[in-house]
Image (cartoon, rainbow, N blue to C red):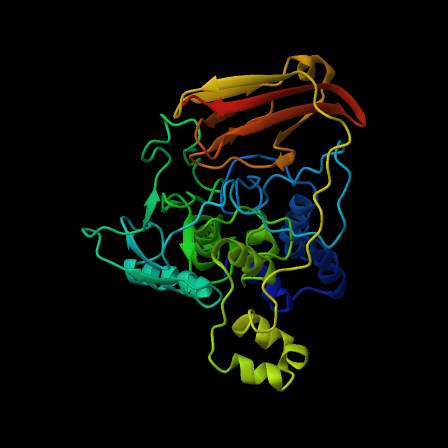
Length: 399
């Protein structure tokens, strides 16, 4: 317990000899000291300092609060779809693994707080969360053996982040927590400057740093490594602000996404007999977890994709070689007219950068030309409800 906590806890014991007048004079001061951390924290939540658009698991929070990332952009140019639309998102081209028995190895361990043994225990717990709701199994192998997934705790400059346009370097404490690569790359990087723990994410007033739950962050990153992007469901583990919201369990949203990528199977042999006893209606939660195929819980109700209200003009076609870095710039009008830029790929809003695929910035975006990134990219610059300008590019690979 630090000094502020002691002062709050021992408020009645600290001034036994003071008369009533002096004691009442101290109470507002002590009360302020007790409440100030809470008020300051609430102020940061209510008015985050800024928004970033990098990819991370709890991806690029505001420096004042862990897990406060960029708000999901709602494009005014696109009408809102029905409320019950799907909210998980899977990778472009449905990137996925071709086998379910995945192995992983840990190349480096955190330097702050957690031991190697505790780190292994935390990562195993995160993998177990996914094995319970998916057809996957995960097994750790020694670092000298080949593996599907490679996990490491790295400093700011790590691997190829300085040379790659789509792989961000870490930014030190209270910034980007971690990031992962989609299948079949199979890499998960954690920021080694963070203070990792096994337990609830919280701020330590004694140390003056955020203590971040490794299991929570790792489970989010494993979702990316399996092929899931960020979810628009605020209650989902794959939501960009999952650390802030404290959602630690895999929701039905993520389960639907995994079913879309890898198929839907029952986990227990007694599912048909349970269904005959009416468990699909009486025990919905149980049957969704163990018998989704028998009870037809694999997918949510389909909803049509809502097209944009305005077709983007001035579409330019670029034929480029595979592996080439391509950068799109959205004009200079945003500089002097202070418009807001919205980026789209094939009419779907792009909200975040993704390592190895695209890097999203305010006035420009970069991609690595490959079969996954082929398509039409559009930027719309708006000021309130008025469209200032639009640009569109169609990318094709040179064969």
